[in-house]
Amino acid sequence: AFMIMGSEGREEQTLVSDQDNGIVYQDLEKDQDKKDAAEYFAKLAALVCDQLNIAGYKYCDGDCMAKNPKWCQPLSNWKKHFHKWIYQGSPEDLLNSSIFFDFRGVWGDLALTDQLKSFLLDCVAKRAGFLRHLAENALFFKPPIGLFGKLVVESKGEHKGAINVKGALLPVVDLARIYSLKHRIVQTNTLTRLFRLYTKHILSNKEYIDLVQSYNYVMHLRFLRQITTIVDEEKPPDNYVNPQNLSYLDNAMLKEVFKKIEQIQQKLKSEFIGTT
Image (cartoon, rainbow, N blue to C red; front, top):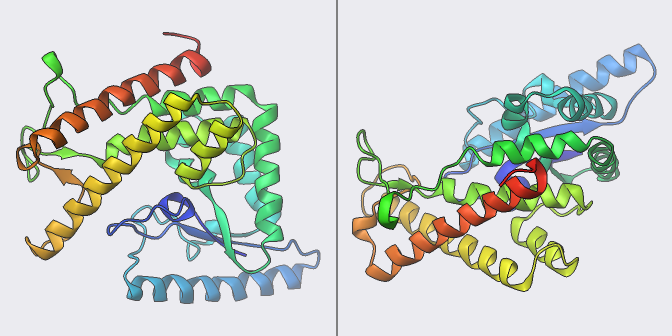
């Protein structure tokens, strides 16, 4: 089965999405069969990843792709990876591997990815401290709000005067992922996860509406910015928005979103770390 992860796994690609994918295949008993399978799927992975790159999905900078032999493995080896992350992974390991927790199968024998998903959720249920580590990582992003509610922008460099709004989405994505892993929700899309959490009464009606509106608003800003860089500035798309180019209402909305993110992080801190 060919599987995709990260923003692709969540069906949340933008115009700057790169490849995050892998191949999982059946475990084999005979040594020659194992060797033949490894060679075959290595060639398949290289072909698919190269064609995706030609189509516009650039190679992953972190090499999290099926053409990396580490991510083209039989099911038992994938299970070992997840077991290690959940039971032995450091906070830094989890930060680097978080994209793998949003995987979904897209082609081939999807029973393989279903088995891997069940294994993941079973491991999470048995390892309470794992979600605490994920919650700690979700607190790394600090909403760029200064004194008196003023937006804090980049002070130097290419994006001076702008804010990386992609970071504003991460706490929402993290919250949806963490609660979904805890409550065995198999869907990966953030909005779908939030809806499932709402129907399970994990999120209140107000929390659900606020999160969905915040998420949709920031995604809207990201796409507008990316289209502007391509069409008007003739540059590669990015996620840096200059508040001075926004209307008064957009600035006010962005500030409210960052305030909501602070509340989200407080919720995670309280429920998974035990501090306020």
